[in-house]
Length: 214
Image 1 (tube, helix red, strand yellow):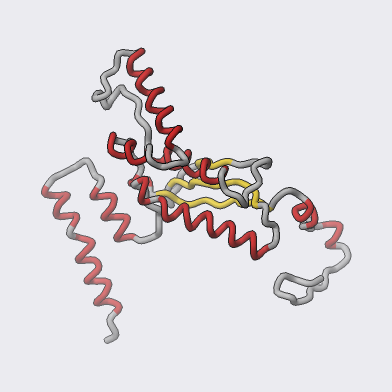
Image 2 (cartoon, rainbow, N blue to C red; image 1 turned 30 degrees about the horizontal axis):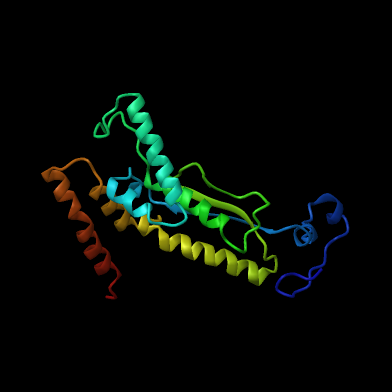
């Protein structure tokens, strides 16, 4: 049997009946090749949308109708329950992560290389120590490996580039950056906290000196 790297493997006959064998023919004959990939969102960047953010989002072609619809729904809710919009505890507001999820779904639905008749969704997976996974699940019309990878890469190039517009950050494993981000978003503001914020800089100096050849 020829492998992807053009090498040849020999399989014992019994393995064909005792082990699972994946046949790619079904994918080749179907309407698309599956894209199932997630990006991890830094939970410290998730927040409620203020008026400036909503104004910015309403200018994005893919979600301008979504934003207006949600704003009208929230106004009606506040009116029906006599809730002042300045009441942060009881009012309802859009979040940047939810609006970004709506944007991604609209973007995928308009993508020319995505099969719109097969399953298509943008969903949250359970959060973990790496952040909040936001997964794109859809099927590329391009089934050839090279073309498929290009479609997938183009989509996630765009996803990563758009994060900043929604005031979101992708998580990456960087201890100093994560620690600083957490302290910047801390609700505590004390001299003890200010002293703690200076610690990462000292750690960096110590780390650099430790790595310096002696």
